[in-house]
Length: 168
Image (cartoon, rainbow, N blue to C red; front, side):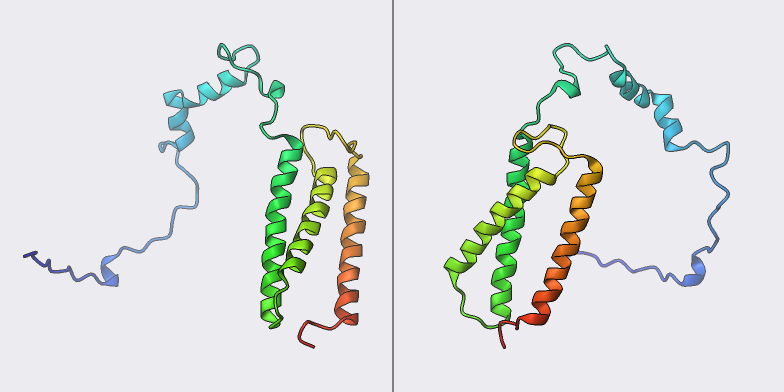
């Protein structure tokens, strides 16, 4: 049978109260960076960054090809966002007590996947240049995002005011 220990009576008066030292570390106290520098842990990082100091058989980062590439990254992002669209569509129809039309939900999700894929591939910044769409200048890129966000917001306000909800 296990023995039960008697708990110590601890009160708030037993805990010493003091403000923390806000003047910064004293010259006698070592920081974590000082300890890492003494042990030579920071030297390894600086040696790897120097040109011509790569280990044998390694390839410089700028010469490496991405694993999945630009299109693969666009497909991954688009599929994730299309799944979110699918989930929100189903939840919205359940919220308004509508009968689920699965072909309609799946069709809308596939359409959303295609649109998101095209926009993501064309407009997302990536280190590898696009094959199908040339890279547009940064200012034009920002203006395009501004125009599409303002247009999308205005359209959402319009459909909210003009069209009724599912339950109406």
